[in-house]
Length: 186
Image (tube, rainbow, N blue to C red; front, side):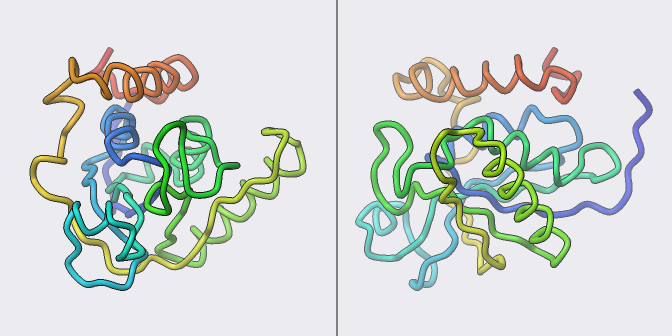
């Protein structure tokens, strides 16, 4: 596969624990970097403990730098809608709280249009059997999470949460989107 490197774009997504999204997007071909962090709240410079207290309004998110010549924003979102449940408000599995909400923070009008189109298509198809509650909003300030949250799955694959929650999502991504897995991870 020929590599074409152009201008990188940014995607900011929240769909449960940021460790899950980070692990998946780190293996997506065309992704340059993935940073776990916080966005969408009212408190500046939040800490993990403050976000967990549900007092800051932030969601756990990942900010993805990607090359649209290799992977499109639409493909980024297609992966997003497979690796989390967009029909649950403020929780994913056993992770409960507004910080785990399903959210797409857009960085352009084109991203907003793409996100709305995908949500409409999935809704019209009845893809989930329930309404999609994913919020689509302009990207707010992004705050990187503490260093110990970065590359979490890579550093702790045998940790209980990683084995029970992150690994199955990663496996689902790899089987559903085999064509999009970075060859480095094959």
